[in-house]
Image 1: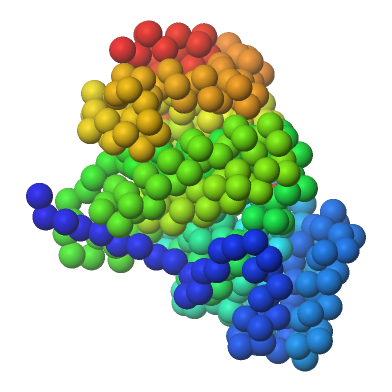
Image 2: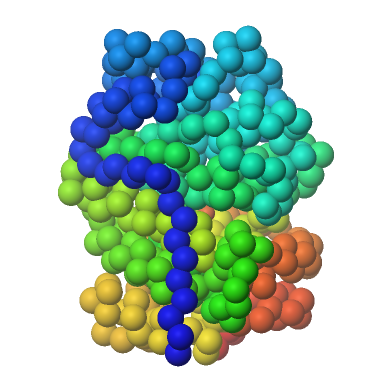
Length: 399
Ligand SMILES: NC(=O)c1ccc[n+]([C@@H]2O[C@H](COP(=O)([O-])OP(=O)(O)OC[C@H]3O[C@@H](n4cnc5c(N)ncnc54)[C@H](O)[C@@H]3O)[C@@H](O)[C@H]2O)c1
Ligand SMILES: [Fe+2]
């Protein structure tokens, strides 16, 4: 086998307890007028105000936009970019959960290239580099601090929409696990389960023929030697830390492991892509109004059971990385871990109505970017079977 690999990452990525206080030094090298994009919760936080104060002490002009809403409605990003124009920022800093980071990415795109977010939906539709962008995540989950993705909600569309382009990978990212200590148990579980799902989907994604141009034509190229490195390490770290971080939010070692795991998972899926669990979550999330992380994690064991014949080697490696007895132990152990941290075991428990199984199946198959990244093909009848199994909690049906 020829080795093929690619990784895309921020120019500078810093991880560690207390590293948030390096922001001013990093920012002052990238710009002088910083638009800080966050939400109302964080804008009132004394630690956040201290960080903003450090930016000002370093000589930057700072404006705080605390209007981020969960799941980033498109209109809110348009309004933020419009409101920022008179300030003329030359640097955007996103501080918060995935929603704040995605909002910051979107605002940076609009301030640089004009237009509306709708102009950039899909893959590789941003015409060139965007202004410098710094990301400081306060959840450990989405990996947005390192990914080429911004996820938005658009009331004109039934499903959430994505902008994917290497141009929106933040210029610099600071991952300080101390910022996640305040996450309540449910948020820790949902965000961390999303991260574990990113790592597993990246590690088990399809392996494409490595023709020249693959990584230029596609944002998501499938499983490869470099993304695997990050994905497997992410699985191991999240497996060690996620339950402990849920059980005791002040467990610093667990918080570090989960945040490192989430960031490495972002590096992995930012090039490899995700697959069927993410595709099916889109319509499920639209119908049930449940958090992204709950849906993808609920679906992951069923998707792995369907994929099992195509991912035997990967299951073996996951078993080794997590200390499980062998490949057959992985899916039951993952279901048990998710159960212990409060992830619903079935789509029925998630609130899906049984008569929407067909609609969910059709919509999921329509998300070809993700379905084509799945290691085992999923034609519509197979998808119906998979969604029905996930609804009923019937893993055996997929064997
Ligand atoms: N860009 C990507 O690569 C990518 C990947 C996966 C998901 N997403 C998107 O990210 C969003 C979800 O992000 P998320 O899971 O980080 O949640 P979030 O950003 O939507 O935040 C959820 C809630 O948690 C609060 N919160 C954030 N940090 C906190 C902290 N430290 N302590 C207490 N409360 C805190 C927020 O104020 C908010 O009320 C979704 O829109 C999802 O589609 C993006
Ligand atoms: Fe996700």
